[in-house]
Length: 222
Image (tube, rainbow, N blue to C red; front, side):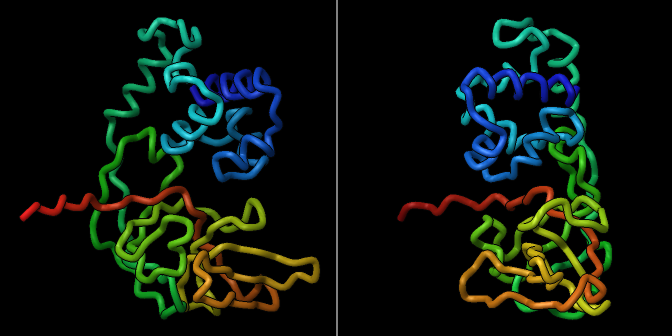
């Protein structure tokens, strides 16, 4: 399924004569991420699919139909996409993560978050965010951040969930300079970066895969 979606992304991008880097910049991801999407190496989440559709000026159905924009909506690809939309996956919520100054980790299973399969293809667990250091990336205090479990970073600037010195957990952007020094950067100018001399001081638990925001009740007019 994702290889076919990727082929559609590549075709639409090439029709507009834009590079992977330019397309990535338009939707807020790296050229590497676009490359992975086009090759079907990474499952695309529904948020990025909608952003890509807007950036490439195509309807979402263009990417979900094997026949393209005029394709039959009953093609196997579209049927599979619909199945994933309505098929729920329970994502375990493993306590909290600090989006502020790192604190001692006290992770524990506090519940489950049922989400559509198409959104959670690469999500292993969720954490409740405490703090506002990642607000510039749309990750706010009280949100549930979705995490893909892995112990490495794919690119500079990737948002990671990590333990510092084996006990303090935090959610930050990972930046490594040429000397090997690590900077864990906030997306809020009120917070200074956390500087580590090497990756041995850091245990990466996973990388950012999305965010779930609880719906808010509309205010009642008086």
